[in-house]
Length: 303
Image 1 (cartoon, rainbow, N blue to C red):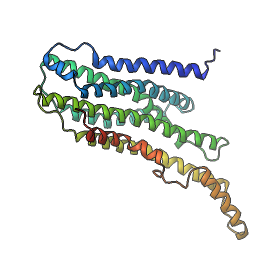
Image 2: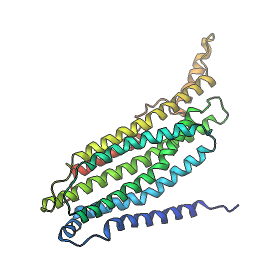
Image 3: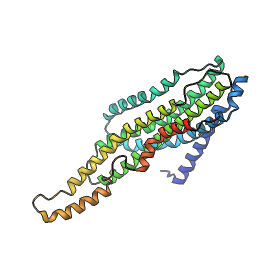
Image 4: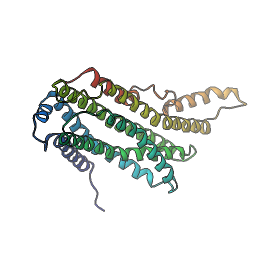
């Protein structure tokens, strides 16, 4: 069987990322209809900022999708087929909750000539579809992870190995989801500023208010909390069950309490059970990335 070195895999992934980022640039760069309004729309610093964020979003997407696929392929091998139903419902509910925001922004229409608005919408839809395609493997991986954590046996021989592996999976999956949503929020803000510049020049009416990007980011940060917190709490519960099984508190020998307490304290620290779910700076930054992206696009308008 042919073995691929890690460096080869990294180089291949970076190449795909560069190609994907270039496609992001081409999505907003080429094949626009010729008109004074379109030229004015494209020749602004706001449009360049939008194109830059979109290119980064496209570049990150294959890396995020590849990680999500690697996780759910590993976890999916050990789960029964019946869990597919639970996973399907999870994905449907998640996609509906995310789709609410996209539908909401569709309600804020703007005035372009019909040919130009069709061209613009095709590009916006291409950006959204690309992000969704990258998000789906991560969502499946997160669903598989939740099922795997729920079935984790604290009495199993490989419990601690799987426990720390699942913690790493949870952080990195949440990180990539947050990164995609954060970049999407920045792209939405840059898109709003581009339309606003165009509106100020008299070509269209005012687009959706810039403050909506803050609401957009806050909503997705809330979704991340809903996705992250239950799995984090389940992992903590499994850790406590492991401690209760392996380091029980002596009931009849007070002289052994000190030694038992010391062992339990070390186990709690080793399993990171002393920390609250949002006491880690890295976890907080990951959760708040969409909200911070919305605030950034609102407070730093591009003109």
